[in-house]
Figure 1 (cartoon, helix red, strand yellow):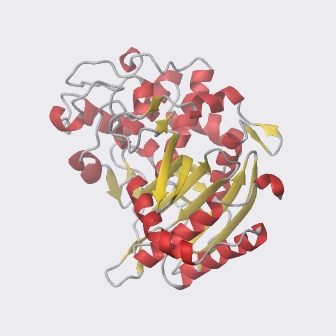
Figure 2 (spheres, rainbow, N blue to C red):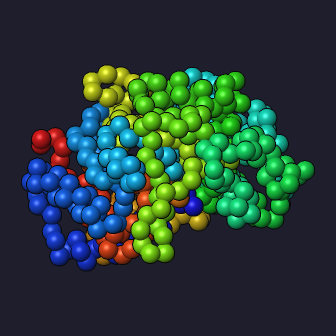
Amino acid sequence: MRVLKGLLIAILILGVAGYVLLRPPTDHTKRIARVDKLAEQGVARGYWPGIMWAEVAPGRIVSVGVAGFADIEAQQKMTEKTTMPIGSVSKIVIGLSAAQAIHDGMLDEAAPLSSFLTVPLDAPDGAPRTFEHLATHSSGILDTDIAYEENGYHFGSTKHPVDLRDFLSSFLSKDGALFDAGANFGEWAPGTHYAYSNIAAGLAGHAIGDATGQSFVDYSMSKVAAPLELSGFWGHTVENPTTAATLYERTDEGSFDALEPYGIATWPDGQFNASVTDLATLLATVMGNGAFEGQDVFDPSVVDLLTEPRAIGLEGMAAASEKVGLFWTEETLSFGPISLTMQGHNGGDPGVLTFMYQVADTQNGFVVMVNGHPDSTLGEVQLVRIIKLLAEMPDHGDH
């Protein structure tokens, strides 16, 4: 599953008691030491195999930390250069690619997809869908258990045996093996209802390729990864990367078992691989209005195109205040009397848990990456405490 909003809210609620009892220090250095301690404790107590985190300010990375193992059996430690799949944070790579294509006049986000898309889209209502509908989860294209959960994941290789275009055609074309008009599409007009859709996000990646005349891999790597100087890559394109962390699942006895490599049919929606430094660089650049460490990476208007709210308070959203740009989401997460409004994305897949957020109306941002789910109340509370410490750092202008 890729949608972590419910999980994040749940673990934040679980964590409030522990947070209140153990109030964090106000000093920045002591807070970092607390994060380090909690991260190491989480490894020692078996809450997670390994964890990576970063605190981010506009245009710069403030600090980076790691704890635990990229590979338990080999006793290979996590490092700042360790890469792992980032789950749905990959959608921000789609969003940035789209923003650049729009900026360059290669993609019209308001044009009917039928004007350039090479994948057949046989929605039963016949209403036109646009790229903006895909990017705001308001296209009416729905994930289904049969198509996405049962056929979307393939274990044994990071490359899914079904090509992205073929999978999308099977799901969206009336002649496709996975086509089900009643299950694959919502009963509402495009743009009127929010329904989170990984398949629509995969289609968005393909649509960028169709609009630009390049493969989405090539376009996103040249327009996003290369300018940011990321070490990251699309998981299905690199076999056995030396930097990769092993992903783990929890056994019935509570220990961690290594997962087989797996591929996702709709890979643009969740299969980008990155290090903690990569994600911190991406977030810092967005927060810096396109600049990183004093250098212009993106035109500020590209960042505006990414983050500008395009859907606000639609039916189906968790709250009337929720906003979505080009997959860039603003949401308020509440726990007890405290709430945080955050902008960015989270991600989750088997053995993957990632968070990349800026705290709204502040200069604080953070990244957290874990290569195994903390599937216990105590583990979830520990993770919440780390997130809270990073999200509520003192103003980064003060140090």
